Image (cartoon, rainbow, N blue to C red; front, top):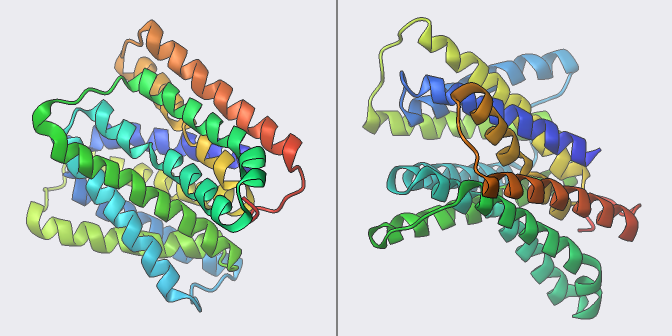
Length: 296
């Protein structure tokens, strides 16, 4: 089921990206982050009241840390997008899955010794690297000499995104419901976007362009809820690999809605991402079929 939740999250996030592409003609990035958080927070307040879920938490600092690392990742990614070619910035951000796999494998080696983690998780680690290779083939990143600083910031965006995803899994293991975790992240997005708007300014609302803000917020919310459930109930390394499917869906959207052309190398990369995701899921099922989510 974690595969289905992550695939559904990828569909929501890719769809959100299409809406952001249209909304960016009317609003800057900080405004989009702010309104995205506002829509999500309002919807979650209503949803939790209907379902009888309290938004009070006994572990506020875990939520604060998740919001901090998530906001740093998002801000670093926006900086990288401005300083680098878009494909390069996206590739560096999607390295979060590689970092997650590295952190998990490294932690297992330290805690369990050398043989067992390599035997059990080594093949999964290789599938994550294979999926990232597919991402690089689809996006074909480039880097000039004067873009080193931007590349380092883009690398940091992926590292902090990995911290954020691991914190999502930790919150779930601590018993926090998905709606509460996503609510506090939405509040963090509102604060980060609001601070950014103090420096970037506020754009006037033009109808019907402003209507794009509503689907952006809702798609981001549904994507966060699905992603949080995937990381809380599934094997983190497998879910991290399946996150690459967002690139595949975004590529299809680009062809359908924007007339993008995908060369042969891109199609091969798409196939590699799909194969790596299927392989990771099969490996996890065969090696440790009944292991709970926290035993990564």
